[in-house]
Length: 71
Image (cartoon, rainbow, N blue to C red; front, side, top):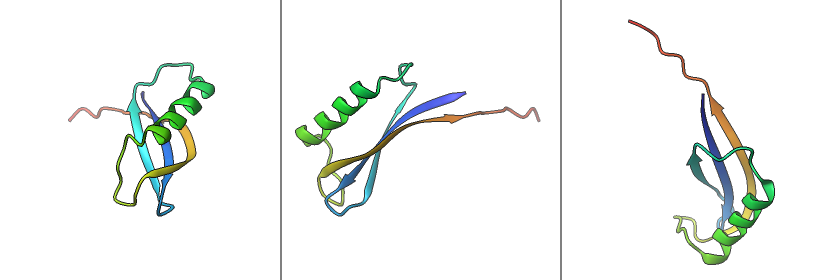
């Protein structure tokens, strides 16, 4: 099962920007994620076509199940 942490932000054009991290450390600490997202916004680390990141939208863990099919 593949897991990914998705950090979703809003940019200056109010569009959603997603930063995804594979294989997150578990259990996830919501306080640390909140702090990391605040720091990403404060440091203006990432550039988007819609401008700077200006707000946090959500964070979530996405799981995928992969089943190989023998041919």
